Image 1 (cartoon, helix red, strand yellow):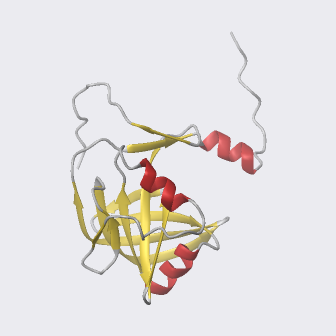
Image 2: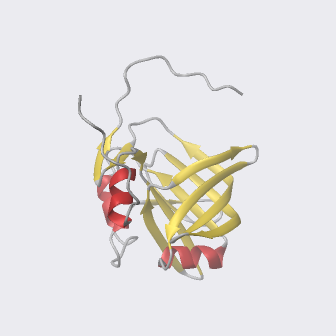
Length: 174
């Protein structure tokens, strides 16, 4: 029987390594301020409330997208499918033209969303907090849509896809 590693106080890399064990989906958050569009790849997206519909996203401090989002008070989220890794990579790098070569739809509030994404949501910021080295935004979903498909997953710095075990869907308790 092997012994478990000792608990330690994590440094940034230790925290990244430990949390990298958690599989997440991949999304692109977009916003617009004045006439400029902003966007970035995120894995920190959570549904907080169904009534009213509220999403939470978390962005590093100092991102241009976060600053524009604070000014505009609105954002859109595109949850990416397994065949959209190139989109995730394009929106994950600093600098460059993220919107020039892409294929986008536009939400009712005028924000770009990734065409062909599995889900798209248009949100208005209802609260924002500074927590640690991140800005956390809560957005009320004003409109959304979704379609079937395989989700793009992220674990330990790598992209992949989710494969279920073939079981029946678990009914939610409402």
